[in-house]
Amino acid sequence: MLILENFTNNIAYNLAILNMKKVSTKQAKKNYLVHKAKNEKDKICVICNQYCENGDPVHLMNKNIYPQYYTEPANIHRGHRECHTKYDDNKAFRMQQKQIIEIVRTFASEQEINQYFT
Image (cartoon, helix red, strand yellow):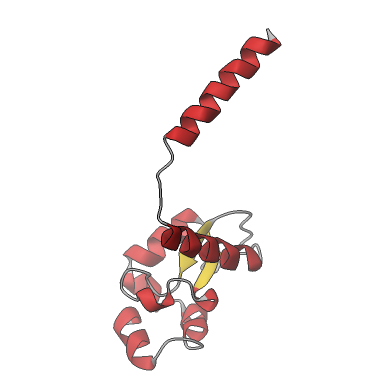
């Protein structure tokens, strides 16, 4: 029975490996830097300030709009999925996040901040 269980687990593992999306070396390096920056932060959601064991890596300045900050450690924080989605999708909510705007001021220009938050 144990042999059959191990065999089944190995098949599942190998199928998972085969189905993994391949990424370029450049993208793999970016992914590494993003997760490293997130994991160096406290286990607190940057948006709601509640405990957050794992959470999403939250880019305070959207990585698609401001690709220059994609791997900037000050731009990458830990956040709950729900908070992250609300932050990204709701500009009015994002404008209320004064503590986040102060963090962003440490690396982005005032023009970029005004464009993104207002």
